[in-house]
Image (cartoon, rainbow, N blue to C red):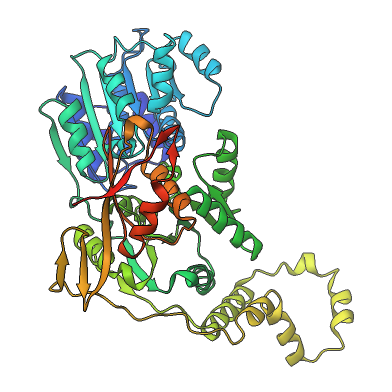
Length: 543
């Protein structure tokens, strides 16, 4: 299938695709669409972020749904409201000439009564988040007995967010005879768990290499101390005058804090995190899509579903805990044939983690030096000169204003005029970067042949431990604990956000996590004094 017209899609769908400018399918679409149109076998489809997975499962789903059968036939589950809305938007565009086909979205944060009214009118396809779908099931307003197709999009993130019980409850209500589709950018352990639990003898389609980042993304890093992360972020922004990007933070608190700092310092920025209402989220995203915002500061969960094709940079203010999360983050740039840059701001203790990421994604990270004040000022100055050179002058409209301009500026000679025009908006860079110091640090990468302490999962160099301690916790998914929630507990227990956190594993009844070994005692002491939803917390070192 080299063009969409070669697929067995209806004329109505092809007409919609033509109006959307879709002519040549992406690799995942080339393989998935013909397969799904002809087969009822379950499917696992893996493709990098931004390669058109929604159309890959959406077009066949719309084609195979029967408009004259007034029953719910297809359910698409996704982890976040943003992704839910994005998929729904795409489905409605694909089906715009299928007037009988009813498609709605259901998600938390919106009025449930409005969604119930839409359900009662009759619907063929639902795109929803697990929490809201189970809410509607419990109320008796959503019946799944006629479902023929189930799609799990970004299912690994649904597990990471603690939706395992909701997914189990939903799948138990589905007919045994159905086609289940699993779409993701990566094949993680969570994805294997879901595939084994919910799919039967699935076909697997993989485009590109598994768990690898896009070839259109350059991966770089800057190394600074923890206290210099924000100054480094400012310098990275200023050395790239046309930057338009997403800054990923680990927690809601940090996301809001960094956004507030950027706004205070004159950047067009805003924060996107889970606690925002739907109207607030939509307002932030609309401003970002229209480029009224230069930076969107977001948590990983909130950023799922962001579909903006011309993002130039992704900045990892903190490295993610999971390799798959980095693939998702970096996939937000380098889309639609554009080149993108994924930046990591790290300190020396994270060098080993960076090397691990390199092995997992099959890409090398290039180290860049945090630019000096002089380098930034030169970049900004010539950027402004370039804009002046390229500006289009409307001589006719300016004609009536020229006498006043000449009169006001007649006291300045040519050299003085150039200085003054160049200084417009440029003086703040000269003031801020005057005499700033070098904040780069050298790497203290630990060779892999040093002694390894298996109990604490770290390396020992001349008696000094560098690495992580593995701890066990008596809380799990059944206690509504998520990875983000665990990070917040650690921050609260230690009254700091600067402790490095390694891998996190959350099972149903307990959890395991890694923290910087130097703070092991502090974490143990602080967390063992805490409660979570009325339940005492017990943390101990895992042997």
